[in-house]
Structure formats: C-alpha cells, structure tokens
Image 1 (tube, one colour):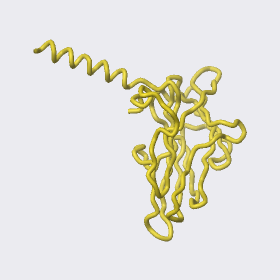
Image 2 (spheres, rainbow, N blue to C red; image 1 turned 30 degrees about the vertical axis):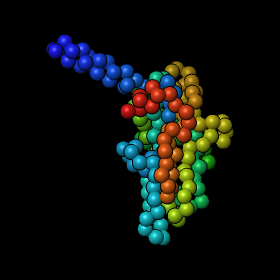
Image 3 (cartoon, one colour; image 1 turned 60 degrees about the vertical axis):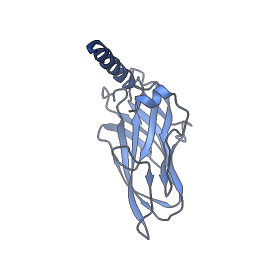
Length: 185
C-alpha cells in the first residue's frame, strides 16, 4: 500500500511540473481585475459606470522584453488615465493609436509569468454590448512581442481574452493546444 501511495505522489509531482511549463507562444489578455479572473464589465449605475482595464502578457518559453499593439475601443467607452508599468523604459505612441513598449535592457520577464504593461480607467456610457480588444499595431500590421535574446527577436502573440462590455465573454478567442491552456494555470 505504501508503494502505491508513493507512486501516486510521484506521478502527481511530475504532472505538476509538466503543467507549470511556459507556453510555446506568448498570450495577451484584457481583464477587468488585477487578478485576471474577470474579462467582462457591465453598465450598472446610470448614466455611466467606471471600470478598470488591465493589459496582461503571458511570455512564452522565450520570455518578454517588449510588445507592439493597439487597443480598439467601442463608441460607448470613454478612455481615461493610463498607468504604465514602471519597468517599461521606452513607450512610443498610445494605446488607441498603436504603442510600442520595451522593458529596461537586461530586464526580461521570465517565461510563463504574467506581466501587466498597462491599466486604464474607463467609463462605460450605455448598456450596449461591445468589446475592447487588442488589435494589430497599424505600423507593423500585427500585435507582437520582443523576446529576451540579444537581437530582441519578434514573435507572434495569441489573444487570450477580449474585454467584453455588458455581456459575458469567453476565453480562447484563438485556437490553442490543451497543453498551452493547462500551462496558463
């Protein structure tokens, strides 16, 4: 009996190590809370409701050194104050027109550890269902990340979540492997 329990414990420990691996591709998500548990916001108090939008990146096995992207806002959202992560030393552009950000040289976000690059105060003006989403940076035609190598090589990104307003929103807006999804937790 002891051998069976020890074997089961060993399998659980090995499975935990496998599940904790970083994904092969970086992910980006918009969330309504700092804990990345909510990706929907609702109009509650007429005439308007304030909410926060958080932009998080999950680095791939190559780490995270910077990103280029744009945020698309619907007409029923007023954009407010943007706060940028203090680790970002270069920031060109704005969220709504296209932005490029870079961490300090040698400051690489490790694989598989979420990093918040920005959060923004927003105001929802109506009960109309809408979506805030990460879209392609207009200059480069993609949303992408720079990885932690000497060349700051560029890699594609998969969208994890949009921020849905006045409606429920699901994850997996792009196809993912089961292993990639498990590695997020």
